[in-house]
Image (cartoon, rainbow, N blue to C red; front, top):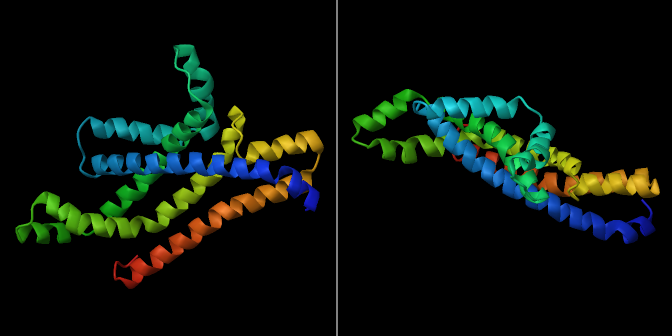
Length: 219
């Protein structure tokens, strides 16, 4: 990579990096909330609402993020609903991520032996105490690896938002390639920027997983 390329376009990549971080962070945070609520509804088999969330999970997991973004950004205005590009990107990431987070949480809840729940109830604990002191801590520990994998997946999927002309990392790289034909430099900077985001997430996830294993959660 030439020094002149970094000098000329480094600021553009920095701004694009911040955009990618912002939409990813908000989208993943909302996805965590959606996934947690959906997993509880599925685990406790709440009537009607459970079926609604089951449809949402299937719809989210079986349609590409690109199609979801196009529907939000180009389809909703036909109904009189106009969304900002960043808001569209955040909603799209959250909609997709919520279903993956829900499955991660749900599978971790269902992996806990029911004998533990029965034992806790027989000791006089209330259902809420059983959840917060028996189910929740173990489920969170078990779900760390798939949750970290989902976070990394969603950050990488955020590159799709360039399709709605949001100036994220992918959009800037494609723009520079189209304007100046600096393909090698533009793609190298793109890879470096994604590594700056993803490597700390991966390392942090490994550290948390290792500490939980040493703490005796058995993940």
